[in-house]
Length: 85
Image 1 (tube, one colour):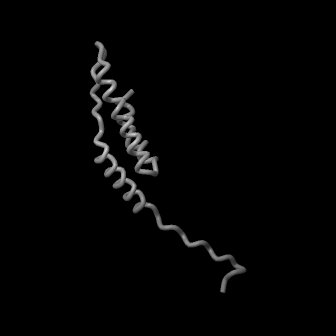
Image 2 (cartoon, rainbow, N blue to C red):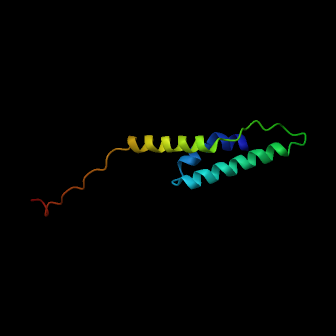
Image 3 (cartoon, rainbow, N blue to C red):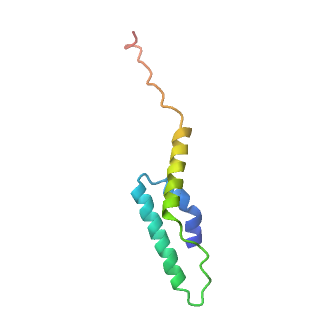
């Protein structure tokens, strides 16, 4: 479960709009990874690593900036025929 969430975490973070929300999701993810490592009672080992919150926030900012630069510029609204001068 954690491996799947780790694989999909970047897409989940990209859907968020505020840095505080990104940090909260990452801190929750890291807490659950650490908890899973503590609960090893003969089960499979947890190979998912906690994420560096500051590095992930920087990467999130970079992905947002790249997405904003890739968006086409907003089109000017067309002038209506009765408003043309």
